[in-house]
Length: 125
DNA sequence: CAATTGACGCCCA
DNA sequence: TTGGGCGCCAATT
Image 1 (cartoon, rainbow, N blue to C red):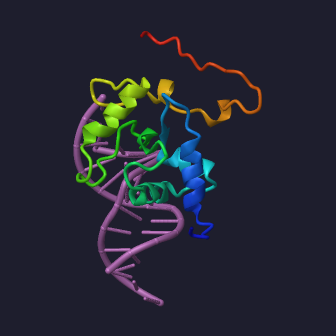
Image 2 (image 1 turned 90 degrees about the vertical axis):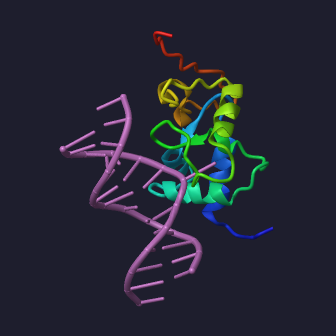
């Protein structure tokens, strides 16, 4: 395959490590991939990614906590939402996700034997 | 080489 | 809170 050490690979790798039931923003992915301000590049990379790819692209959303319109065509906007709901992610009435609860925390990522840190928010719900 | 676009992010009204 | 505008950086035409 392409022997390209493009940032694409780093982006995919970062997205792959997003835990189940959580979501990350483009800027988050970009930063973790070593691309401080290249949130758009992440989006571009994902756009190049065909449906059925082995990465949880559905967990990638924008900083607004909403799924990106993706240009309007391609897949129904409800599709991504459905996938996230299946993972346990809850959408607000406005169609937004609580990044406070479902936002992936890269700093809290257990490595090695770390067991879990639970970022449970005492929210009202 | 220059201009335009873009699965974005942040600030202001 | 929601909506609109400007900015950042790279890729594409």
